[in-house]
Image (cartoon, rainbow, N blue to C red; front, side, top):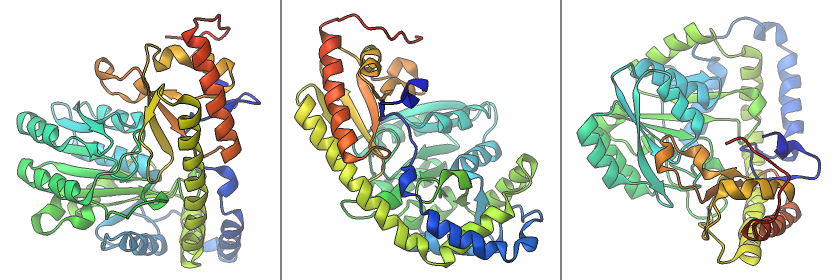
Length: 388
């Protein structure tokens, strides 16, 4: 959105991590160490990723509770978005059915749709995907894939409890679908208790019906384009074959830098700093919404991640309010952008990110949003015109 980039605008719209929190020093040290052996890093990488990085990512996954074999279950990808695209490509074809929670990240929906499969949605709320609705829909359409963001979802900020994750695994076995967890945000927990990945809870046959996708974009830096998948060996093998047809391999140079960074122990030092900063910014947004817009917007405060999912309570919807917000130099994303089925969109919902603005900016943003809502409700003239 070009308006988000205008000088003076407080942007709550993007899904970017905070640039000022990047560990530039740690990445510089790792890069310098890799430069000393640069000649060995300029060749094509293994398609499934550098062994050094696969081993480090297996260690990181184990720290989250998910133990895997780095040689047969884990593969490096170009961010978790490529992992989602590869998995969709090898699992789906025209005539197949897939299910994704709604609202959801639009690029995940696109990855499913590009296969020609029919994409269905199941409602998601403060506790994550509606398990009973999923059970009923899966019984009718027999999906091959069900996709969720189980921790601090985008856009809802919701986390699925341990018990509900176990229930998802039961449904995967019952209906014989692959449960795919995309996990960009779980490391960003600043309140409450951590919940293991869905695949980490899988025992016996259930392990064959679970896939885990993760990324370094939100915790290290998105420009690295490093993600990974953990999957049953045969599915992993097919995804690696699809990656060979896609980009041959991710950069060996960048992979070695990330592996060195992890081996240096900088990741464990760095992530708590992000959590602390995001926790303060989340508090500032919750306080600002309550102080400036109490009764006019409802929200559930997340325990981690980067987003608030808020809802206007009056007659004004989020799309109608947006031009007034832009004119008052604050920007958000209307909730309808996150619905695969436009007919089911909540027009009063909006997503606001607290990641890239400091506490003072967030407080000011809430003041501006309140004034924008005043102007919109008064039907005042507005100079901003947006395409439908």
